[in-house]
Length: 322
Image (cartoon, rainbow, N blue to C red; front, side, top):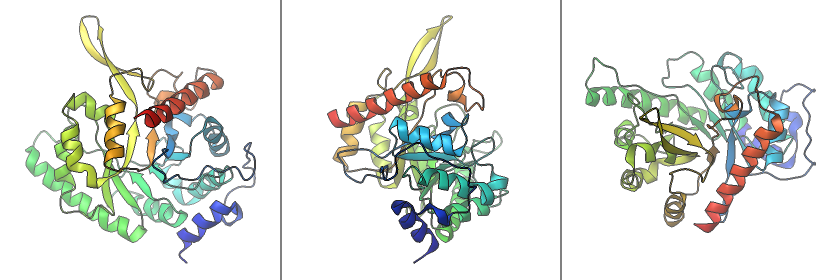
């Protein structure tokens, strides 16, 4: 049995002592309470994007996520994240042990990785693979001003092919997220089709973000979604509105279900196509700084946790109704 398989199996049984973490970690969740991944189409595997809990240490982050009602954590392993790239070999096992103490198994993480030649790329992927992580989100590419878009996409495709090879060695799947906005590769979903062309989707795919897809694609988003459906290995959930501010239309992030994302159509499509992949739930509306990953927030923790719980419950209800 490979080390990652052993760790995953042991974590599921509550045998957390195999991880080299500090003894100061603790848990407020009852021993034996399960928050493992659910492969049943009747429910979703919802992970909190840990950017929004960066005001907490590993133990308190895991406690909060479990008590709010998440199935796991999409851990930030990047500059200014919960785990810094230069400390990944030392700190990632600590974060995993804290999660395992509340019944979470390592599954998702978010990185700034875009190239095999970046500092710490190999260390991050190797360490995460050994600890049992299954998915990681990449960083973003931007279209350079001095290179035509088709050539730039070819260049980025080469980088992705190299990353897929490294992912295969590390036994982990990468994912490129579509992101709205000028200059982002992937704002137009067609970009990702070219980005992933010829790449084994077992090792590099797409983390599909319906909020960003709706912003850029309005009502046409189902067409490119269908094109990418075989490459989607995880999804992001959040919501938005267009609002007029001082005579100009601007985007405003809002709680799930209070915006313009057509979750009924989206969830119905996911169910129809049997796309049941891990979910990363984001909170990008005003939460006292937690929305930006602040280390010190201005809102009461209870206010932040209640907002998160409301969105988790809303997502599950929308999924059930779709």
